[in-house]
Length: 278
Image 1 (spheres, rainbow, N blue to C red):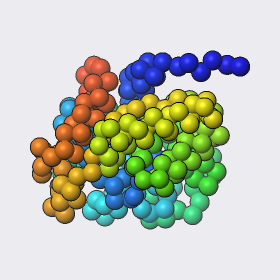
Image 2: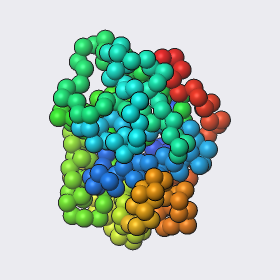
Image 3: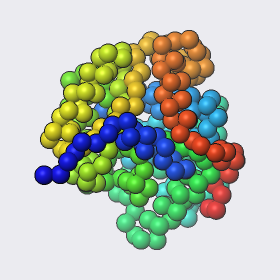
Image 4: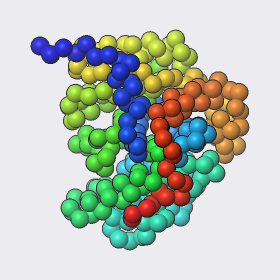
């Protein structure tokens, strides 16, 4: 029987110190509003650490993070792959300082299967990634438990979970589906809507079950507490780290971004070069 005595700290170090450009796909078992708030605030917090960030909406159901942002003129990656729109307009700047890009606008019944379009789509995403430090992807699994972009399978994968029983069950199911599709590898766990102690208990229970029944290592990435300031900031059209910098959630997002930002060794990629080579 194989030994699964992995060193968690080493696994986390490898996850957070991956080569640039870093591609982090976030699969959420939390409510859509909570997921979107986490993605936007994390991206904004990473910008404040000096990282160049693109937030990429890869959801195919039309309920991704881009629905929260008012970006009606944004060109989608699918439109570029079909030669319907120019690639130079895929990444749109936001007032929060990060770039926003999207796979599609509205629900997608089927993803392209024609080899040339698939290559164009993957090439286009690669060009976006090469021009930035970190790409955070609002991700979801397809009907076949796969991802729409090849880079998502080889990049880092984070599962967001909240302390409710339904969310924990859904998060574990996501890990189980990923394991069946991708084989044994590690995944990051981000617990939101819970204090540190409760979040640790959620993680410990998930990590123990994943290790015992799936031989999968889960890595603790951190937690973000429930904080009314997040919703208050959203109503103002701002991030909580900007509107209420002393709020508990703001402190948590800065700590989380600091852990990610610290992994970016060397000089950040030049701004404005996100679509180079397209």
